[in-house]
Length: 252
Image 1 (tube, rainbow, N blue to C red):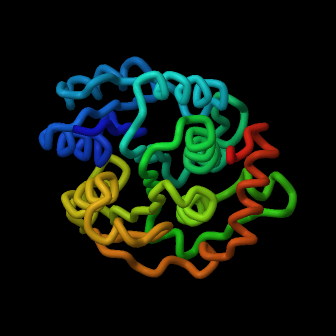
Image 2 (image 1 turned 180 degrees about the vertical axis):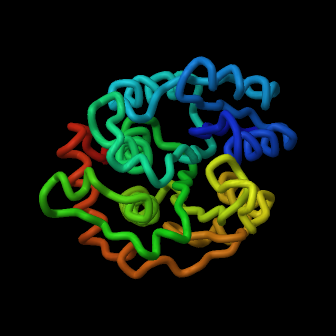
């Protein structure tokens, strides 16, 4: 039996992945952004070990979430599933920074840096990362104004950057596809099970995950991501810029 922590797991792919892992006999810690969503998470996945609350648009709440999650660890894997979609680029979050940047890019960085290392880290990306730009090494506002595609490129870069730094941790990015969740919409053409299967495979270290550190996965198969994501200098600059913004550096 292993323990897993999944952000953004009050519904959608996060909740379905939790149910699958629980059905296999594992323990899962869920996450929701507020108390109402936490009740939804508990109702949707009554077998969960706990539901932690933290608004990822708040740097302070994200730091507190890392501390609370660590109390229930250690974890076999952390799945950074939480995310917001197009339209939130200019909406201020609780810390005053753009919500999309804070939730999609800064929060997974902070949680990764502040929590004890799990055996595996999964950063959730998207096929739209192919059109993203890293926005690093320049004016801070350019990074803060990142688009959804930019943030999903950051998630692929995280997997590769942390895989280089922490060879003892399996680090991966996953593209669950355009599937009919609340974010994807009812007309999305993909199969939800394909996304869940990919998450579970990576969380357990099964299949190709066992020999592909930093890999980008679609439908449980490794695929080639944007060439930009593999640039180690850009990866390092992204981590440096986020450390400058948050005051939190990557631990050794």
